[in-house]
Image 1 (cartoon, rainbow, N blue to C red):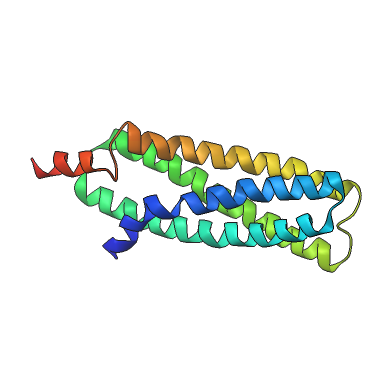
Image 2 (tube, helix red, strand yellow):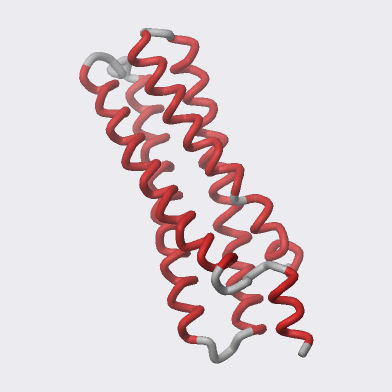
Amino acid sequence: MEFLAELHPRIVHFPIAFFILYFIFETSGIIFGKDYLQKASFLILALGVLTALFSVLTGNQALTAARLLYPDNQKLYEFIELHEKYATLTLWYYTVLLIARIYLVIKKTFEGKIKYLFILLGIIGCILVYLTGIYGGDLVFKHGIGTQFQGRLNSK
């Protein structure tokens, strides 16, 4: 399953893009009253959740690989744990948001003030994406995880 660990840095950008696009489409659809933007935002949200699930799964494999490469680096694991915590929280947050959105649309109650609540929920979701990215970026740029620099360190 090592190939899943190698996919993680490539896969993570999809949910980031989908979740940010979801917020933009949802907000634009609500503010401008465009039904097609709101329908598109639903599809984008579903794609975001699906790709986030795959990102978390590949991230778990990357953690397993990191434990093999750096068995005693406790400082590194603290960063990884923060990144993992925010990534998992982000996945669950958007999954619940998707389920709530489906429920409200089916019940035909996705109207009025509830729509504007989803703008606020989208902002909160974007903050979670940002925090996940901060810790993931630190792993790459401060610790060299998943880079050629990391490979040269391990070969010495």
